[in-house]
Image: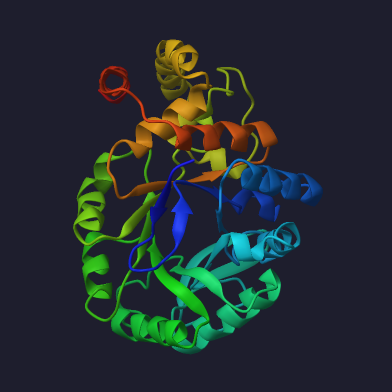
Length: 328
């Protein structure tokens, strides 16, 4: 496993991180068995992964609680990231309505008071007195308070108090990144990025490299379809995949055809398709690290393997050619 420093911090994180969204057990991914989730987390540690990402919105706090159980005895050896700003218990109707699911209304709130409340609750859920990376989950919408200046000032105060070590922002635009950096030090940007969806992030990836921030991709496997385990006739039952355009039959045919062309590389690098996808994605820019969600031990093993080798340039070029046919 390779490791990279995150932004201005001294966090030396594995280039492959484990995301715990699916471990929350809500309707996005369907029920999750906690003991299995804990086994996956322990396997990740065994594979050299030392960075774990969660959020209060994942199972309405349950993902954080599962991570607490899994990291007992390991906390001083790993880095933990959680998030703020997406409240499932927000009663202030003047805040932005993000969505409604599972009978819960989610609202965005990045005010200092709300973030402090969320941070204290997350620390309790996680069983720790600090988090290594604190990430604004979704950004304030135009016409709503507070400003990025107010949010970032509060985050920097949390850092000075020793409650957080690094500051990140997710689901964010280039302009918002530049606004954050006016009022403090942004260490990590977390946006969706994959071999099937990278053009929208080219400017942001370049900006992160320029400003020495980490660009952490989420959904690099496009919610599983790039892992090579989904067939043309696989039934898609959970919401997270039903909302992904690459699971539509016409697009699925194209993706599966591309993966078939990539299979000879599995023999060359002694791995499976998802490892190849991880290695290819990491090769796109030195600022990139990957946040991979895994519900099975074999999934996290394969993802972790991809963070341990560098692909030859001719193989990267070959995959680029296969991709151009899919994206044409």
